[in-house]
Image (cartoon, rainbow, N blue to C red; front, side, top):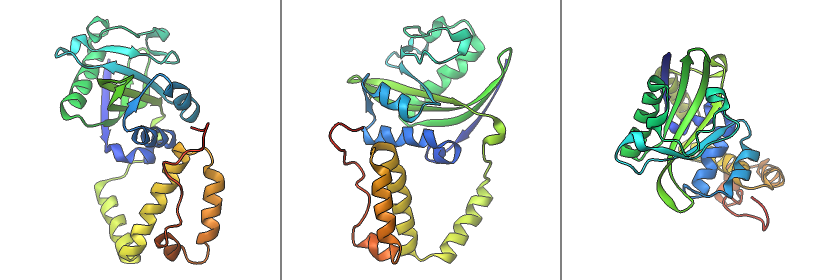
Length: 233
């Protein structure tokens, strides 16, 4: 088996997959604490993503085990790994990457976003997000979320291109305009992720912003990020 891993900054997930962005916004909205009740929401808003919960409380990564295994996953012929410890997984070369990645997230207590390219009898490529969180009130868990992705669909952006783009933005917009742009992007994406009435709210906001968007934002007319309608989300 050959495996190639390409790492991305976790904050760049919106550049790779918008459902993944919705997932991370929802995690932030829930303060990185999920329960079984979140299953339906995540499956409906991020239907292309598979997600598992792994217990990483042991000091021995062989004893990490899956609290939850997404039944839609086709790995190993669709085998259900729920309750299975990593040390019991037969494919040792495959599981070593998994143990190393989970351990790193545990030690750093920081998320990891990567593109995984696996070449074996079941060749595939997928985006993988590993994120520390609490599940059903228990800490020492990680969310492992994956979406299968063709390589050609993924953008490649070099650090040089990012620097050039930043220079153009700084030269074109004032600091105030750049701040407003960041506010707009954050509010639109966050509201789409957690607020079921986002379309109406977004349309109203854009209508208000037609003539003078900068003044409108600084007067406080924005999207109700974090506010929920009873019975929604």
